[in-house]
Image 1 (cartoon, rainbow, N blue to C red):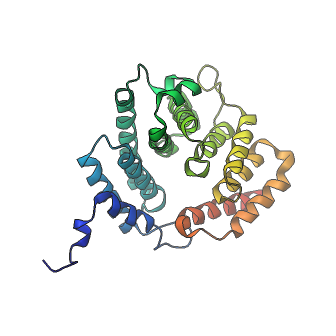
Image 2 (image 1 turned 90 degrees about the vertical axis):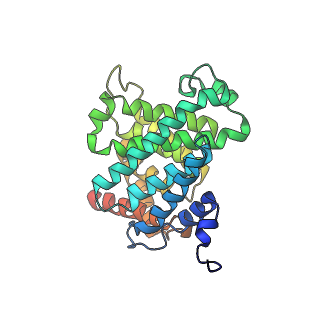
Image 3 (image 1 turned 30 degrees about the vertical axis):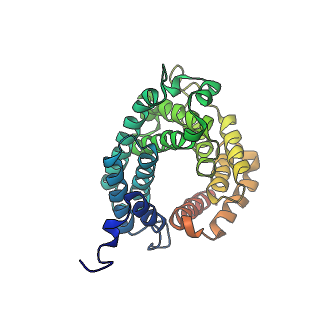
Length: 277
């Protein structure tokens, strides 16, 4: 074998996956769509690592992150994307089912209050468990998009999303620069409030969570976008302020490490601005 000919095969699969994941957006259309080759290779590497060590929460979380990117930003159609989310849901549920045994818990984290959650997971594992719950929530949300908001609520998916995001937020509020806060802001702003099913939905909490995300990282394009969208939905008296923020999002330069994600966020902000004009 020639030296270097199959260097990727000699590389640790997690390291290979990390390298490919970091390159996931290098080839893109400028509007939030990536070439699928790199992310497909990253998924393959992470799945290899997870196959070797199914209990590795870090590998599981990275696999779920890559699957979501493939579904949201690199799929040719909804059917292909749905398959990625389905796999992500599967990995999330498998991982969450392992958590009580892994840490010697008498009940699942999602049945605990915030103080219990924090006391039940050793500090050195808080980030990886938080990421597991975060990506589980994200995949359930993405998977259920085609179902319609009322079905999402009536089938218990909304409650699951909220429960998982709550666990993740308790363990690490900084995950993905306020990712849980963005998710919860979206849920409270958009879900229908159905008694005995989604009575927890609160439009005022939507704005509070959006502001919490900004407090984590005020210059984050995603945090600014969700704040602007939530304000338009729940605080119409601040419409001009929200429109100005969304306009700043459209003009923002995508970050190198999040180029495709930021492109997609700009497109989302542009579409909402078009509707408001």
